[in-house]
Image (cartoon, rainbow, N blue to C red):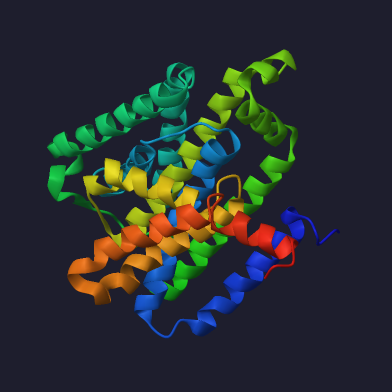
Length: 313
């Protein structure tokens, strides 16, 4: 086995970090932050496949996150479904919905695509807010605890390992997808759709495939969040959340799986650290993001990787 490849060495190193990290988490608060990082990272890894590798923007991905959360909530609370079955049902529903939506949306390009995905996300958010009888409306609704064959997940330490295992599997799948012929086709689409079509790549098919894949991962992250938090509101599907996910991908580094994880970690932890600035929190937060984009235009992980490769760090 070649440990130098991302699929082996990279995943192995990431697994070691996950295994060692609990030694540095002194209390439940730190566990909570790391769990939220993992949930955001699952959604960001999928979104990075769409934005970073296929070159297709989405400003409405929080909608799929919200649908996954609410399917788990509704099926467990109102219909008594087992939580794991509800989670899988949410992924299936989002997969079918995103497949239907992808056909027309993925034919758009540039700012038309951005507006199309934005409109999709806004519609999903409005539906979740207005369907009071089904979703509880703006007040949200409770979600049953995650359980499997009678065993119930409770406590931050248990949830840490659940989210860590799902994130590790997501990273491994993403790295293998990128290294496969599908990944090469996505990069070709990103480079030039016309050139890709000339070479025989079914551009629409691959754009639909990556859109559905990223949406299903967002649904998975949403369901995990709902069961962990025990409560869900339409805020999880709103436009601001979509922008946060895109910012995580861009900050960490587009076309970098570990960059997506790093971006999710930074933008989940940074607001917690900036609370000491009180009224200037948002100002400092914006300044950090602007500075990163000016001096690290490729994103954090690719820029650091390039500097290390040149021996400058």
